[in-house]
Length: 329
Image 1 (cartoon, rainbow, N blue to C red):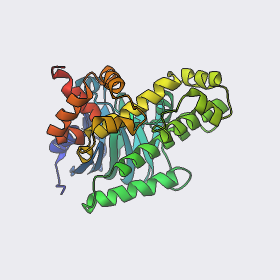
Image 2 (cartoon, helix red, strand yellow):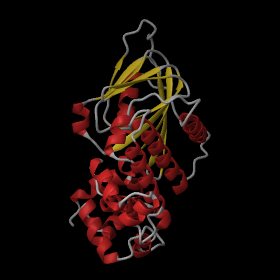
Image 3 (cartoon, one colour):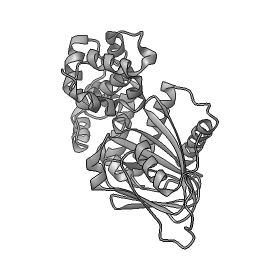
Image 4 (tube, rainbow, N blue to C red):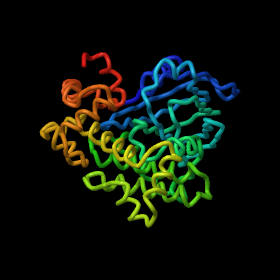
């Protein structure tokens, strides 16, 4: 249950619940007495929150980023009032039903000129199925909740909000995946503008194909190229222009899936070999080697630590890996 907070406790609460933030009362004659509320719940590696308040400006600055950068992406849907989001030279005006995505690794600014309510979904950036270019291009853009892709995502977010308020949320890997998929689809749609180059469309399609076939041990550059009727060399070039390689992208997505599953107490009955095999990594010795290269800790030690501290999983495996960096390897 949420409770009404005055400004100073509310300002402390949003930093404790989300990430380090700065907040100041808006310079508005209507902003007389501040009253805010905050309700939050974590489902696996996804955090759902509803936050309300009066006229206020909330900022993520270089100073607060240096204090903590756990690697999150946020989706904020306006429930009541009017909001403005600014990041990376983009600006979006949010009316009820509209939403925007933003990256906590970069400075941003949220402005509310009067009473407002926002529903916020926060999850690890590593779960996105898109590259840095789409993320950078898609942040702080107002997505209308009544048409296009917004007409699909906004009702989904509204349903999550209602479940949060009614206390009917249950842990569900499928729910988590739906959040990641929808956020990635929005960024793909918005990241390159309305007129997307054919190469960018092919790249997005290739990444979607990879995501759907991670369990296939034969997934490789040639197979993906054949399915898209292009040459392997051209496919490789598309990924290189996005700052990656085909093999590297497949490896990153497989490791992210494995890392998520190793953190999940609901899958504790599965062996590490079974978990990596379900995502196309059938050589458990090789998996252990590349897992440690990626995350700095062997998979067994990572899993044991996470199962002993399930709250760490609830806050997202990226944060957990950081917390475990001091563990003797």
